[in-house]
Image (cartoon, rainbow, N blue to C red; front, side, top):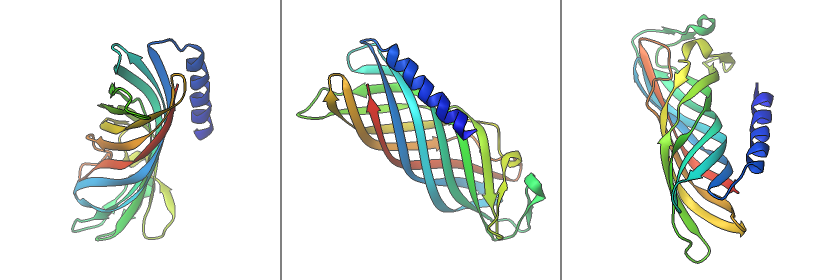
Length: 216
């Protein structure tokens, strides 16, 4: 599955670079940071984990410094939740027992389609600055969980298939060639749809980190 995702990303970058026109820009981004969960009901948040995200994005400028953007992103995030109920929780996947007052370390993988709007300032000395905001509709492509035994188990049946979130990002652009830029900034993701396919527990993933990229 991961090899297919990487192949699709590189093929898309190649096709987009051939199709570039004056009012279009394209980019490749890599983000890394921390991920955690806003959990409720029978579970509570119990620690953060790592997050990384790789994406390809197309930007269509309808004014000089304003653009719509859309892309394709692979996101992998980790976090911990704690069984905060009065009894053990039975997970659907492999019928695992989530013991009382114990923590579970979960990992989620999503394929998302970031869409939104971007604003870029005029260049000040060496840099220009950007701000973008949009939505992150997506689909689950995998998930796993590690309980007390430390063994990682499949978690897919306990996860909802579809997801959607909000993404905010801001940073700076540095020109390296005509119309080509390297970028660096901060990124924040908040998924407002429940990740868990369960009636007695909810988890809403969040993540924040640093994003680096190349715009051409």
